[in-house]
Length: 115
Length: 112
Image 1: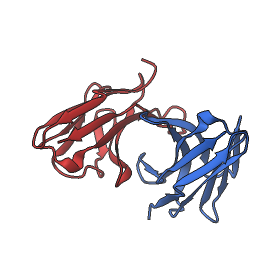
Image 2: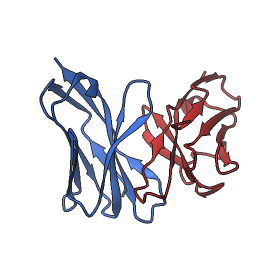
Image 3: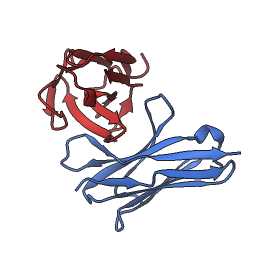
Image 4: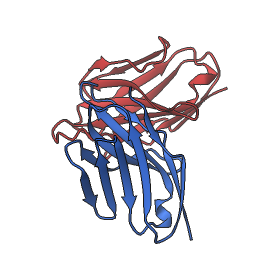
């Protein structure tokens, strides 16, 4: 596709359940990022992938959060034992290093609601 | 520190210019970006400026960077109702990996 896509667009889950959020980056973009947007915390960085490896996981808020990327393309963010404070919009972005400007292009986000 | 701050709200009349301001504290920024977010949508990259520049113009958008004061601004000329959105500035730091640190966002409301 032309842009970054994410699925699902909305997810409602019960507290304590696990959820998986998916991101398809722009074709050919080697870098992929996850951010979280919530009312109280604004836009926060979670994790960055270069290819399939994650050199920066510093933003993951707890060990309940994990992410992987396979084939240098699709990424999945997994939240285990969800809590109400995990409710937020989870945004994925991708970028290429070819232009040297490191512009990040964002997907539409997944709105997660934990009840 | 990596604090990036913006005023929360700006209201302008259609046809006027809008100026959205951003201040940051870390002098090791390399690139600074402006993103637009419409209700229920993701972030749309509007423009960026490299830290060795002080101005960049792109159609109705003008970005000004004052490195001494760590101040960034986005001017939108001839503001239209379609410009109503939340605007975020973001910085990419030298040695900070490739992550972006975002400002708090400024909600722009354009009135007729």
